[in-house]
Length: 326
Ligand code: DAH
Image (cartoon, rainbow, N blue to C red; front, top):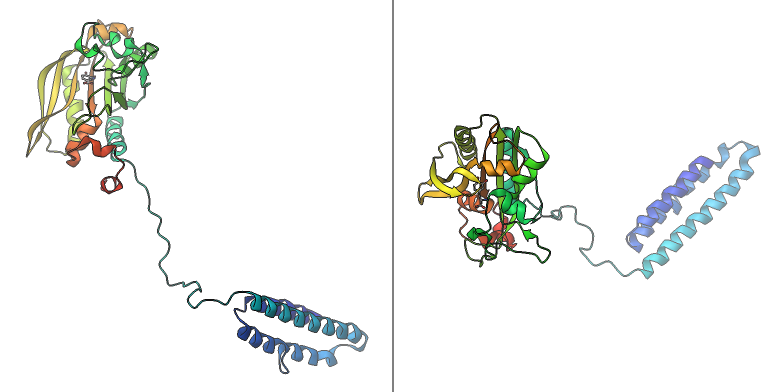
């Protein structure tokens, strides 16, 4: 019986605590303390208690009855003090849940990831280089002499400490050659900076992906094979490429590679060539023993061509109506 009283006590306080208004509380009180309530039915069992325990049981009955009355009184006072509930303020379990928008990767990040994934499968590893660079890594080691027009301050941001903001990711070539021996097969994505006036196709900051492959017997045919494999994976299996002779100081021979688009015809997508012997020498690699190819592509440019984006500034304006489309 003592056990039953304990349960009764805890159940009654739990239910009283959950009562939302006085009317409900009153019903609960009747259920427990009413004439035919649970307390009455437990106390009726006092006759079953052995005589020697009856005194203790009686005391417990009195204690629990007083405790229950106190519980109901205090809950009654609480309910009186609390502001009345407004209709509809009860949680509605049928309401749709709160929606948290999921973020996504920026389209340029997605393009970099797509490109690096393709080259990874071709055996290239991904490396990064610093954005603040030396003149040597950005120019000299890449066979760009002092009088080359690209060195004009118009095309490069110079810093007061004699360094510069790299204007091409080709800087990574020299850094990799200096710290590793052939075979070298790397791809280097990153930001580059040029003091260009901003318009639909120019930005003072944009992204490039550089590729470099150096080993014994690397030929122009290897360059073609790798670039075809990349372009067909990235732009589609029917993609056509055109290699057009060009000049870059750091490659010999050099080419610009165009991609064929139904509407616009041939469009340039990247520069490439066989690494110039002077560049290999600058990287402490023997040009008699090794040869290599290199290429560089603009990330914004290939993203614009792939997705039909007409203004480069859209990538940098952080307008979610644009970004959400990717
Ligand atoms: N660095 C060149 C640019 O910014 C792109 C480039 C062309 C990179 C030919 C290369 C290359 O590695 O071989 O326009």
